[in-house]
Image (tube, rainbow, N blue to C red; front, side):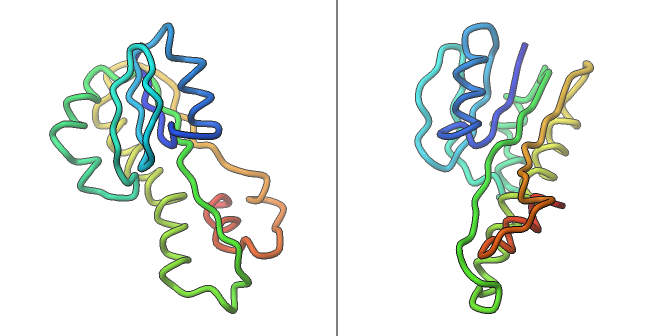
Length: 140
């Protein structure tokens, strides 16, 4: 099967890539360097960049996609009264807008049934101090 994974350089995304690399063809995406994996095609990209999702290179790679796991995410560490709009926007763009862009691209390419997973966080339901943008993006 062909599986797309965002946030594949670290954390949950890297764990998914490691677990799935032996038996599947992978499309691994991250803005940081990604560890080489068997049967994997690596994309160094900003997942919140619509041009990336529309690029002919990615569109071609998505042909025959079966599943997708959206793990890319960033957090904040500031009181909302001190957070500037640029920081807020960056977090929402990566944690929320990128999932929309990725799901749209995958659904446009899919021809068979399969799963699409968007990783969230307990912060979606249990707010924590200093993480307003992160909590809002994960709840959305």
